[in-house]
Image 1 (cartoon, rainbow, N blue to C red):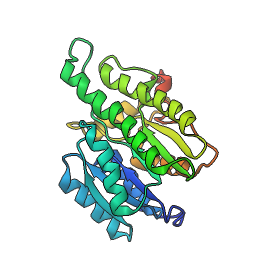
Image 2 (image 1 turned 90 degrees about the vertical axis):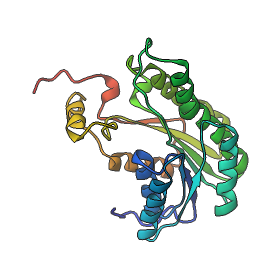
Image 3 (image 1 turned 45 degrees about the vertical axis):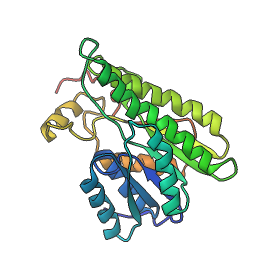
Length: 255
């Protein structure tokens, strides 16, 4: 991991949910690389969380792992409390944890609906509330929510998931108003970044060809977006699409 921007986040403490694996891990590493102390949240991936913490320690960063089941709202307040107790404070909350299950209208059962709304939307809302209570109204802080390009172009094959991400966008804008001026709230909406479980790089490349930029992205693209938002002091209530233009529609160009 390259570190070319110094330690401009040194002294800040951030909580990244779902930081054990995939996108959450990449965001945690990016923040730690700029000097932030990172609370690495995980649900069931204890070993992967320990590996993320170890990776941060390897380049001289500071991190600790914290477990919480985000399907249980009573654990969201406790997660904030534990992080503050062990790390002293929190300055940045990154709501990255999410579950995804491909299911259209006919296939969406109540358990599928409930799990996705609990983890993807309900938990970020109540984490944001607990975080805001901790920060108060005087100290500068910020919340970064991870949305999805499907938030504005719902995918009928993953309708419940799309609805949760549309809710994240609405929540981002609402909280940006409610928590101003001292807490900034923004969102990142990724596109094709990592292949879904069970798929490989070839699948990702094929999906990428259908975007206007005719390519897929990387976790480094998301890290750059995150680091921009956490240092952009005059930006709040924004959704930054990092998707090669996928939210605009599929490319009509023929290769």
